[in-house]
Image (tube, rainbow, N blue to C red; front, side, top):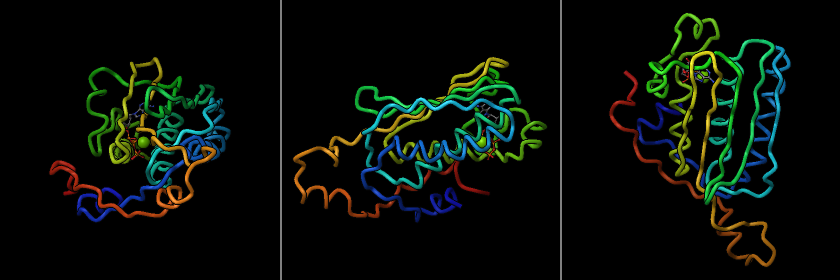
Length: 201
Ligand SMILES: Nc1ncnc2c1ncn2[C@@H]1O[C@H](COP(=O)(O)OP(=O)(O)OP(=O)(O)O)[C@@H](O)[C@H]1O
Ligand SMILES: [Mg+2]
């Protein structure tokens, strides 16, 4: 639905300061429940307290859930998933590491393509349709960020998502009140249309 709306050029995202750590912790709540259900160790390393990006908390939450879901889905029971957050230069970098089945060098360049699944039989078993990473990448790019997946067959995966940090910390002491108001009000912005190859056929 989100991609279809983006295709049509009508999808809008909010531009308000979002506390990324808080948003990631929320997504981890679901991750912990899913992990417990499949005997997977789930570890959270979210120290950063005040990393703000200007964006849409619902979309970012969805992005984080997609990466947590992948990490859990492609890790057999007994494995582990670790979620972290750090600041790097001017960006907030969220990391999702798993000890799962990994992705071969042949498949890796294609995983962001719509409906692409490296192992179709296994993906079908897991209930995936191959849209998660396409959506995740769209959301990251709409936040002036990017997603990268590092992996090798049988060696687990590391998904990295970075988003440009807001220059202004709305919690900062002495922050002019008028400016906080301006920053926190909802500004609906049009997200540019997706390129032709993204259109659903
Ligand atoms: N952490 C991971 N470990 C192993 N393979 C992965 C991982 N993340 C993604 N993949 C591979 O990349 C493919 C594309 O991922 P994507 O999230 O777009 O789709 P999906 O998980 O199959 O389905 P959906 O997310 O729509 O439910 C997956 O089918 C899988 O083969
Ligand atoms: Mg997925």
